[in-house]
Amino acid sequence: MNNQDKHAPILIFTYGNPSRGDDALGPAMFDLLEQYRQETGRQNDVDLLTDYQLQIEHAVDLEQREYVFFIDASVSCPAPYAFHKLLPKQDDSYTTHAMSPAAVLAVYQRINQQEPPPSYMLSIRGYKFSLGQAITGEAEKNLDLSFKFVKNLLETDVEDWGKEESIRS
Image (cartoon, rainbow, N blue to C red; front, side, top):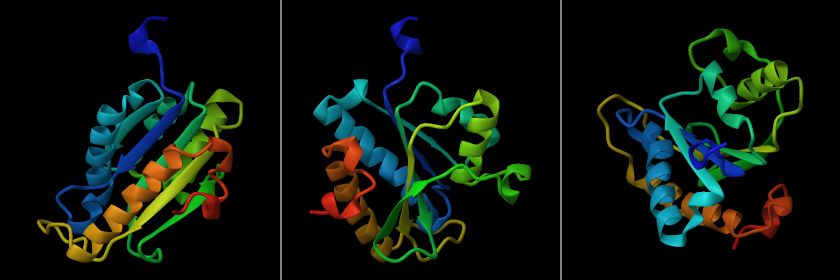
């Protein structure tokens, strides 16, 4: 295996549409994390991916990972964000163009005949998702708080990721 084939143990997968207002929170987090990764030299232990939405093919991106972290905007989570562990679950999204993170985990489980890596979801509270809008000021504040949370998370022992109270500063 050459270095280009080597996967970092942690995958952070952000998603959302940068042209739809607060739906751009995922891609905006990607940009912040890429800068953080460059500044801290975390290229070998954290891989970043971003896309408009999750699709069945993304199950392959979870291979050879120790931990996976999905980040997306949400209109229904409490502000500033919600964080929880994910479990594989085949839901109705597996038959649609866009999938839920739980459905991606279920596809991984089905094609690899093994449990997916421990996976987590960070939902960042957004408010307006109309085409052509910029990120709202409220959502921008939530993004800033979420970014601080993710940085703390990456500096915390991965075994403690499920204990959110041990991560918040």
